[in-house]
Image (cartoon, rainbow, N blue to C red):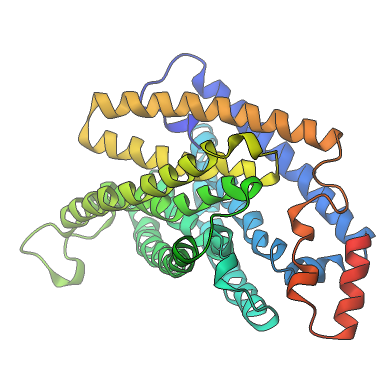
Length: 364
């Protein structure tokens, strides 16, 4: 996503982006095969995963990955393909929206119905079941680059609605997280990189607002809502930009809070899968700033974005190396070694049958 929209490009950057996109597809298929093996090989582990007080929230990440793949198809595929791909992306957008609506409703229902989660344990990961909607508005905004006006306007309206749902639910969850920070201590040191997840809602909403606003003059009809006294698309454009500026600094504040918390406890930390939160939320923060810089035509802000991109690429390589190293050392993705095994005894099952199933899942 980030490499495909740099303010300052160079020869070969598009090729590097294509390589990462292909790598993304390979990793996605490989991880899907691994998780499918886990659920098939260990009877009952899928149900345990969806009911787990920590692991269940990450079910939404699967759908976020799918949205990002569709996003990159627009970036890297549309320029080389015909109108058929543009129509396919339109269909995928609406199909994806229907699926993630079911996920957001039923996954939160399971969490609310089956678990009692104390506010003192609140983490930004509680946002993840609705996170696909935070990406859906961003996805819709980028699809508007190639969509014709007839199909683009419904995507424009849908993107506003979907982003609104994602932002509103995320805001509720962030309120709980903020309450936890005020009334309780910071998360455990190895989990603190997960604090970056709080950056995403404001960052990706800012990105959606500014890009939807930039496309509004093209996709919003001149007589929208019967208004003919002024161009409504230009009004959307101005309002979207102002809202993006408003939200971007909120995202930056969450990023700064997480950074300070991680730096002061760096000596006590060790690698966990939470370290991947260094990347994705801050990518949204950088993309939003790139789009704001494009709207302002500011060389200075564009330079900051290029520097942030270099840092994020270095962080991605560093986290990937730590991940592989920890895997070979059996410190992550091994029985009893992951944060997804926490909370079983602490929160407790609700029946004897459930307790037996959870014990089997832990052993598996």
